[in-house]
Image (tube, rainbow over all chains, first blue to last red; front, top):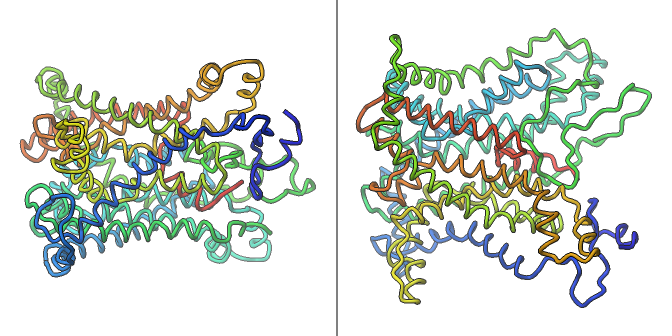
Length: 292
Length: 323
């Protein structure tokens, strides 16, 4: 292959060291991605996206069963959702639990990430592993052991129980995003701040904090969504007096065939999608803020 | 990363998380065990450990203490016994359910591999914009509500649903709702990121010119793939396979909603022992078994070069993209 092909980027604006496609000598490229592979990827992409979109047409149906395809067009299910106290209470519970859990997870997770950032050694590694372990613990195991202990501590079916459990599973997300923000932080800035006479606390408030705020917001959003959507632990911690939205959705599928879940699903999917776009949009803005 | 003036530092700073050609770091947790040449020396005595206390306390109350309590109960503390662990192997039910769970996990892994490998490969072959789109698409199921996703799968797989109708065109009566296959299809949709991300990370490190060289030396594309590309991608494949298999073991909601009680999986058995039979010691023992198997396998996958947390990857790639 000629080296000129190496120098020309495959597309304008790609600043990556990828061997460019070799010059075409035959009608079809020597090293092109074959069409059938593109088709496979398109189908797999549909498999990722399509199933969830099914709930949206269902939510405008006016039948009272789960039958597909949806019949008629009405806003009946949305009206159900917004007028039924059971659904509304679950929504309110979910929202407040998620807010408190995310706040708690963000506070302790950010502190831990900052602490770990300047710690090295075996103990620090162990601490990090402990904080990250809930991400790989099977949800059902976590739910069972939490349930058994919380029964004893009278936390089952309480707001505090939900918030504590959900905060704990939110910590890893905060830890990861804040750690990554910190790793992009130039330590010289902290030194500059200190040399100009700022106390460590002031340096943190005026230099570190603004620079890692995006990481903190990202972590908080992930912690919120994780809690809002969490269903396994929630199923175990529920009580007749306190349950969250996913638990009510679970009930509506298993015990009471309640098509309102279609409307709920559409609303939740839309809300969570919007929320998840926040970190992405934040990420695409001001990518090079660390540049001097 | 900024350029470091040579005058200021005796040694060059190693950029810690710069991974060439990819937005996916190989591991979620940035290495903290290398010497920080760029840290001011006099900050050593500051009590950084105090910052860890709240987080460790929270995890202690919600995770470590309950785990310890369940473990102690399962070994019959204070007088030690292994009966709960022995009965897992001898009660006839647990092992059968465990085997069925492993079979389901295997099916999920096969589906995820078959779909994930070409997907990850194409991700390495497109431009950065298309790659970002493909990455977001992978994570869509991950961020759609668990219950909404499972409800959607019920609609799709149920009798009279689109899948059933599709097979009816060919005169077949296939209802995947209430079958292990249906459960596996729904599970692999959400587990695919764990296959795609380690794979993508491995595949993007492969030099394509090796393939072109092979072609130039007269190899067919298939042979070139099999002899060169495949062996080089094997670490990512292994990591993805282990991760997906492992994470399949703990699924509760999907089998509970899409499967049948007659074909329950280990998570359902665990839930049933806890809430219906109130056999906390037996549930504790089973939970410990599932947990240990999971952690061992995940640690193994991580060692080979997998990414444990897809979210971590997205969080890191979106908050700090380095090209």
